[in-house]
Image (cartoon, rainbow, N blue to C red; front, side):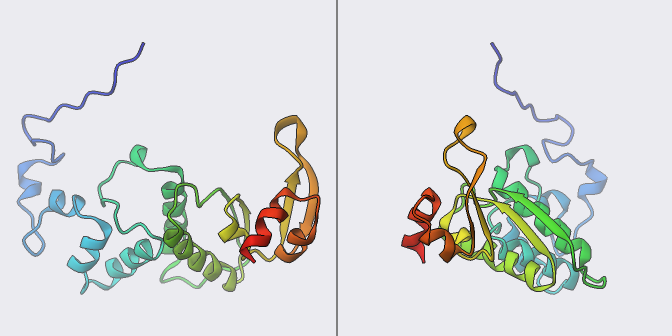
Length: 191
């Protein structure tokens, strides 16, 4: 039997995580605790004139993460949010440097838990990565993403001991035309 995590506010900082002298430092009337309590979208508006921050925050918004808090704990993020943050970290790290190409990115179900509008935003960023000369290997079940793939490898025909064999491979149209592919049967409706 485990009890739920218990959080207690510090008597000195009252949960802000900073000493008073740190909280006294302000940028445009907000201290570090105030800033970390902002959503990405709020921070984008607040830092609109700070070029490097604006670019980073815009990328997070492009990835559909405008609702997360800047100071949000990583253990409260979903798997899809964490993967999108990793993509952003990679892209942000490369800003200001010569664009890297020929990088292979491997992603496992990056659309998990995403609304269709967020999938569309993710797709634009993934397409930008490919257009810069990179390769993506994506393990995915979301047909909205699969239909945009250059090449699909459909494994199956079932899961566990009944899977692991190549059922079909090729373009999304090839997969949809393959009568033995369960994925193809569903993919037809999306093409």
